[in-house]
Amino acid sequence: MLKTDAKYHIGQVLRHRKHPFRGVVFDVDAMFSNTDEWYENIPEDVRPNKDQPFYHLLAENDQSYYVAYVSEQNLVPDETGEPVTHPDLHDLFGDFENGVYPLQVQLN
Image 1 (cartoon, rainbow, N blue to C red):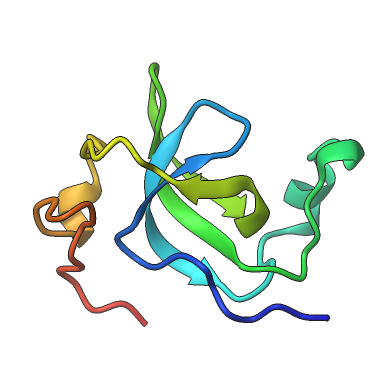
Image 2: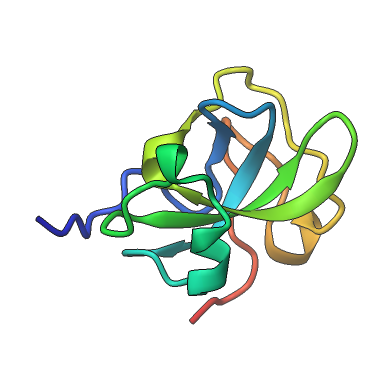
């Protein structure tokens, strides 16, 4: 069955369930919309199903900032209450308020 309702929303801070990074959602795909090459590079034993929402995150870990593309099954809400420090955040979002970032630009 195809799941089309995203559990998380733009501006929400999430963390990866298994890997040590967190980030802010800036876009959501109702189902997998990346390349087959990207998908095939994920080890088969941990490869997520394509039929679920995938999230674009302005992500950070202890060493770097980047954009991540993550399946819904691998994300959980970040409960730290701490802001994300990704340098591109202010291109899209306003100041961190009540645990979320308000969108400041119109997206398609």
